[in-house]
Image 1 (cartoon, rainbow, N blue to C red):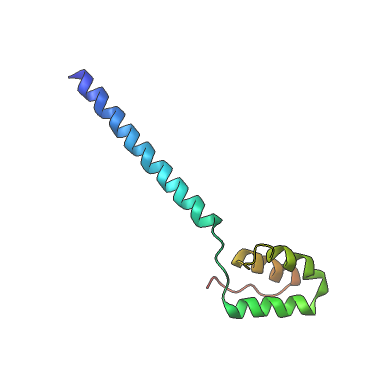
Image 2 (cartoon, one colour):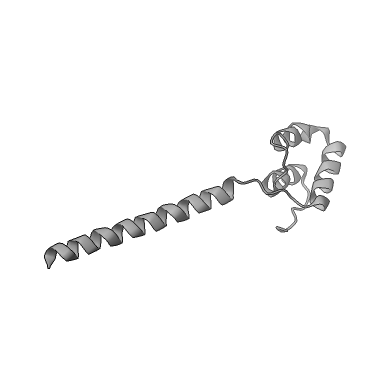
Length: 88
């Protein structure tokens, strides 16, 4: 009886561990994937960078991977003192 109980607890622990690892991988992969901002926010940020040359290095760094993400756009807008729109 004690053997079966120990074996069942090991199986349960393995299943719980597998679920925890799967959820962690899923969360990390969602954060790593670059999700582009909408066209209106992209154009607003681009116009602001063209108007304010000191933001050009931040713009170039943000577009190094070819995608402007919400975090990158928010960072540029905050440095310029502009209002940051809510997530779209």
